[in-house]
View 1: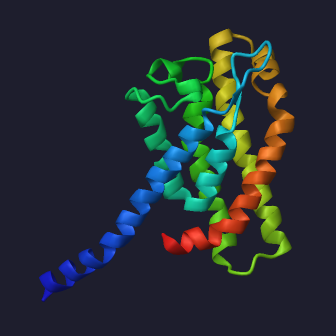
View 2: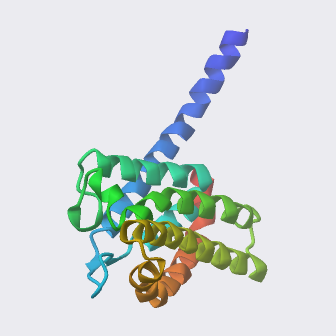
Length: 197
């Protein structure tokens, strides 16, 4: 009897596991594609990419655990040599270079964003307070990305002030726009995508 119950519950959970695995893979692919949209920044080793937008959206749409998983998969693929980092880059050295702090912060930001927007998406009808919460969570997720990036730049360069000038200030305006876009995507598609997972 116990074996029958166990095999039945395993069989019923397989489609869910497959759907989540597929979602994680698609999330990693979206971030990899967003990394190929590059605008160089004068006087900064860090280019503008669509990655922060993708990281927040993937985390918010998939939820904390799956968002974290998607970004860990993305980093693992890059470390293993697939050209998924900005400009088709790959390898462990990317994690130790000037953009490595941003990359390492991506899974934390995605997991944080996904976990904290979950109550809003689970509530059904989204109220004004829910919209504000999603915007705030996305802004905090973006802050996590920048804290990781600026911290590594400061360690590499030995100058926190310079790290802020080259790793944060040039990106503020664009990143505010990305926060708004990520929040809009999460609010528009989040409930539907979460129901499929």
